[in-house]
Length: 105
Image (cartoon, rainbow, N blue to C red; front, side, top):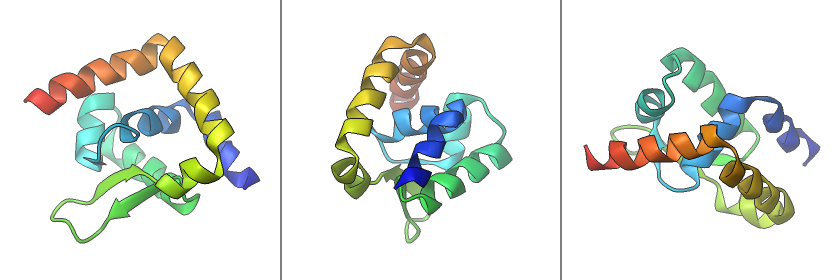
């Protein structure tokens, strides 16, 4: 379980978690919203997947990822603390605004 807390060290992965808690997204979607190179998105997605923080639907035409429900259940305190931080910091709020505009496109 301790390995999962390593994700906090990387702001990009925390930003991905912030988005995937609300909507299933592909790597291409995340790249458009976060404006991070696609190769970097793939590295972060792979890391989060290996830690069990996200799950990905590999059978879909596009690989769609979302926050893993079992991760939330097993790490509820961590998740609640993360939500508090994500709700305070402008970078995470800006990403959510972009997500809203992205959904409407």
